[in-house]
Length: 436
Image 1 (cartoon, rainbow, N blue to C red):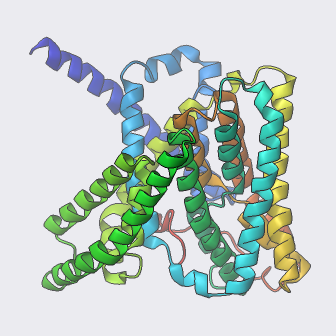
Image 2: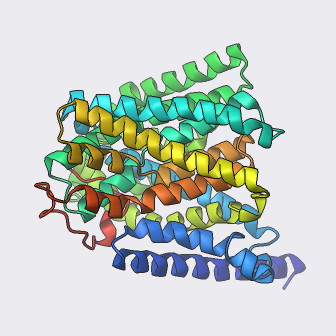
């Protein structure tokens, strides 16, 4: 065997051990957290943090250094990004735009309040924090921090509503509709901010990038979508509603091409995956056939890799000094208050009783996956330093974990108390928003 083959085999051995560890720990933690009434995704996020430098790395630094060293880091980086493109495709595919027509007025006000208040507070917090994190662009830092504070995790919230048996209630419909509005706005804001940062705030380059992504969205909607729908319906009809391998190959190639295009435009590849899924959202037969082929594998294989990769980037050792910890508490407080007050007050003014308005604010405060996507993009762009990355990951974890106990408390003495019951959802429902 050649030296090159031996080197490849040695690298493969390290990767295989890591995959066994990552997937196994993520699954165990997910099931453990579910026993305590938390969604499985909370345990999967915890698994990533446990395996990273903040916990395992501090207790057994030599173990972390041995497990995650050398070329393995770039390999996990690429795997996590490919998985994220596919995950965003599935999220776009399951995005139910009909939510935007249900409880439209109240949901829009809740969404607007839940974005503008945290975003404005985030700009103010960034101004206070920037002297403590020198070396990053102040405008890019402010915009990404504000975006991170204003995000709501629609896929995680959708899964929570199913697990809590609230997905078909009035409160569930209102909240998922508001989260859908929030998600649309969040993606637009994130794409715009990414374009601004990548263009180095050059007005001409920014206009070109934004125009290109809008043009690409129109091309996908007006040209690619009709052609793809005609082809997919024919393929499904010929195969009795099943998606054959050649058709799946075509879809995967198109997803990767879409990711490639958005990357070339100058924003991140994940946007391409989301756009490709979103143009197919209303094709229920194709959606179910694709989900049957892809969802479980992406959830079980790629999602733990993304969480672990995020955990490897999250280092509590970067939090040196009381000032940074004070900033961390401020970020957490602003994130929670911005969502709870903004969304809760908007729900109350829309005519919802106090406890239901509070419950809506609690659910809209869920960050989880979408938050991690945003801060990883900010970190890759160099506008989120390691210490702030830790703060935002902690904020994503806390705001997700606090949802279940606060929601249980908020729904006491309401009509939803009898309905609310955390329950186990089959693996096929992981990361999916409820269909309504």
